[in-house]
Length: 81
Image (tube, rainbow, N blue to C red; front, side):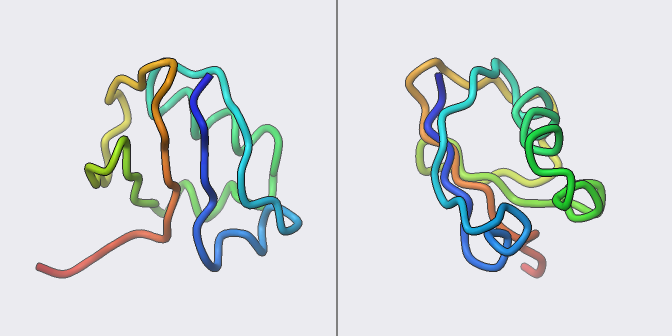
């Protein structure tokens, strides 16, 4: 299972939960599982979030694979260049 860290302001949608384990093989599956567990995250996920998988940052990477021992940090969408 991937170790998931909910970063910063997104914790307000998870009732303060900051870390959990989720069994998911892709970023899409992980985000779907998060929304299922925390429905308040739905609009934010649909609008876009950034993910760091084992230290590498992704945005709009719906089908990026996640390893069983990966750490995934879910953050507000990073914009800019």
